[in-house]
Length: 429
Image (tube, rainbow, N blue to C red):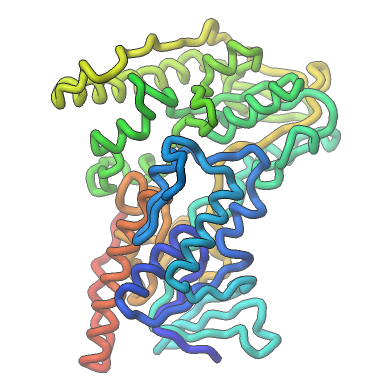
């Protein structure tokens, strides 16, 4: 049985950020990673994928991008190498290829069992445990997928690599956030007829007035908004990701751009019966709502430009592009339309069937700033965990510092009193 003060489950951006923070505090810990460091960037990304955030936003505690293309976008392989270099920079105590099977508490310490248990060295005990397995755990495939004809090939983005891997024929991409629009664009440009089923989305141009839109969001403090500032926590955490794509040419890939090159846009998927797919007919309303949200945000940026007297140094506002037509059919016949594949770009869900602690509510971990109701149990890397960018590479560091401080205080109290004095406030969000 291996013993440590703190056990971190997950060797991606969240787990490594916390490992660096605990290392800086001289706190003993181990990191368990089911595969290689940053495994998802190695094995669950398609060939052309790049970060949607510019390289200068690739910042973690004590480490940042130092390459010669700060405004570019790293490929998946480059991101994986960045994380491996980060782990090496402070000799992160990562145990790779160690999948966690169960986490429980024996009344005194946490007990973590891995898939190496049969070899006699797969169990750990710890005073603290941190779930840093990420927000994008498992693909969230809608239940209606079960009603799709078996002749239609189905794939999720984590299993997709290139257009050539799909059967010949057209493709229906379901979901219009960053992943959906990028894949629809790639599939269309490969010569395949592409249809994109559009639901609620957040639209923004890649660049605005000569600067990357994320530079503006950083400047106006959009990422500093905390979960305590919102009225509806559940809705805030379920907001679709920004409809942004990272490309070397910095081109905007949004619905008007897709429409202009020939991608067919339809409404959200409602039901499936074999080859027949019933669709929502409110595409115009959904697109208009996204346009209004975009207009409000760009107006905030313009106000900041005026306030900071930057106008003379910047380009004029670009004209806003709109759909030529927001009409949408009520249904499509996949067979008649020559569609042979469906890509489910419908987001992710979390699965904690291995977590035997009383911290789950409706399948999600109850927490406030990463502190759960169970003393010594923490979580990191959740969407909108505390700040709007908590699950970004550039945002997880703030949460990691807070959790590291909380762990250090808890450990110090045990060292001085021999008992754990919980500082946990009851999470409500």
